[in-house]
Image 1 (cartoon, one colour):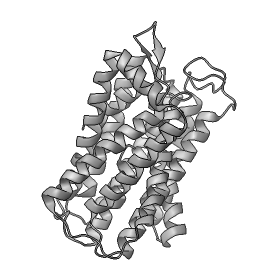
Image 2 (spheres, helix red, strand yellow):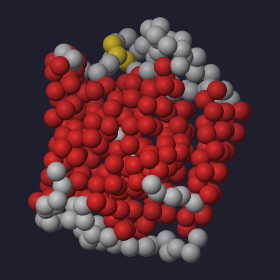
Image 3 (cartoon, helix red, strand yellow):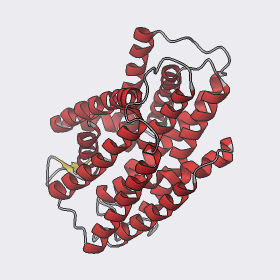
Length: 330
């Protein structure tokens, strides 16, 4: 999937110098948030024009602002965490989305979950703790730029905030989807992207980061290419997610995304020479085994190629929202 080069480029842009070895760091993570949201807005707008789904008449415009803000904050936390935590650790940490998603589902939607989900969440947490605690680079005293961090556990706190905001986004959108029976997935995606694009642009202007980020990109041709590929992978990758879940179901997609996590970690370790101890490797195995067990349980009694119809309103489209947020990179 395109999320593999997307993740590798994310690490390259935020943790390595331009030019290589002797240059300066790109420290404007909110510029990446704006870029992602802007291209998602364009993609969802084109889908609206092409597919022409019905327009919701029951939603109130301010409802879209809540998931937009939380989605922006989750992306920023994820990008900033790379200053303190290695990319393999961040990638593996995303597997722990299951726990806050279930917690937020209880709080916002009073949803129930099978017992095995709680067991899986515990084992994923144990595996991540083993992996992160044994990673050589995980000292927390200094960030990737060599600057002393204000808090020893800054990276971990950013990842926890990422999980909180990301789980709120998914559960709030699922709640909207259930309350407004005339709301289509594409319209929901377009509206939240529009809010996020405007709000992230305002944030860049207010913080005085818009011109410095633009100036940095203009001065370094290499990052221009990286920005272009990064945006293309992010945009087309979301289409891949919709297509895969729509045509092959959530189980097949979960298998693909689990494989993607392993490939991303392997490539990152090879390219950027991250060191993983035997304890860290065992923690990785624990996480992958727990995720595979959950996939097996979810697949019981189901067909792998399940359903089609992203345009139709049904419980399956609600499943699309939930699976999309559980596996998507922000």
